[in-house]
Length: 114
Length: 234
Image (tube, rainbow over all chains, first blue to last red; front, side, top):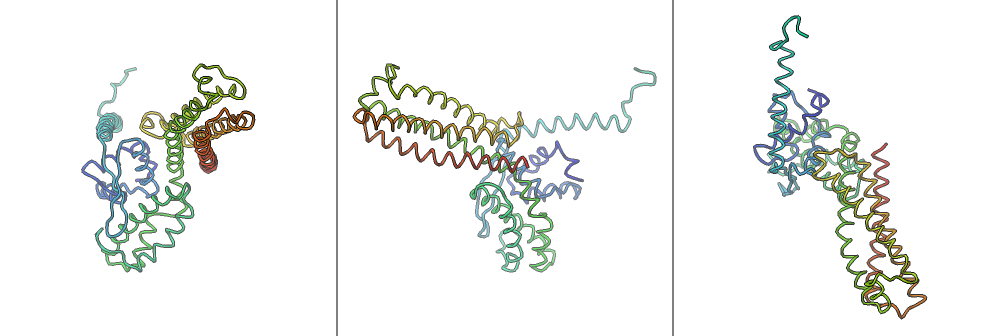
């Protein structure tokens, strides 16, 4: 799945990837890749800047640590991030339900209806 | 995986890529260094996964680099974020140093023989008649810096402001600081030349030195914001 197709949903995906606990940037990429069976494979240049942007917006926080002699930046959800994720989930369910109903024809208007 | 020490051959394979990234990344050295450290860690993680699949260190380094993409494209993806971060840093520093400068100049004026009553009674004479202009400059600084901080912080969740706009407001705040410090230095210099006995020299010298230092730093920061703005627009 191309990054363009996920436009508008990237923030929600990144927040969801951090829901289970702190992760570093590459672990976020891997989590999205593995959680979607490889269908969502976002480029590095998309994920790292987006994580920085979410941090500026106060939705995630980061801290630096040293692992195997190199510095590592780890991200975690803030309370504002959890609220934003819950809100994004609600919006997504509504959107997906509406699109599914239309594409799968489960709620088409009756013939002749205006 | 992450606790495995980095193989020298693996690191040697990553070094040219990291050097190219460093050359392409925009922004101040401290911002670039933090991004590089983060990407370095990600590259090592990726490469160690490939090592676990049986690749040799040079092969693993090449595979990790291919996964991350062309350094120019990765660096370009950071431009907007670096721009926002740079604008935010400049605005925050100006907002934080403002009260200190106010205290230094306030103390200098209130302890100067000819200006203490003049300032307190709002009865400005001579060169000090230009003092209200400094008030206008302060309003400009605070407004521009607060807009920058809001545009690049929490409120950016709700209102999207382009990074070049944030850089413009940060540069405006920086140049307003330059104007304000120049005004204060000009007024006190004129006073020192024509009425040297009217000044309390020690506090005025301390305030003037701090103003001069802030003026130089602010001018450089404002110019860097404009340079970055040009990079963002192009």
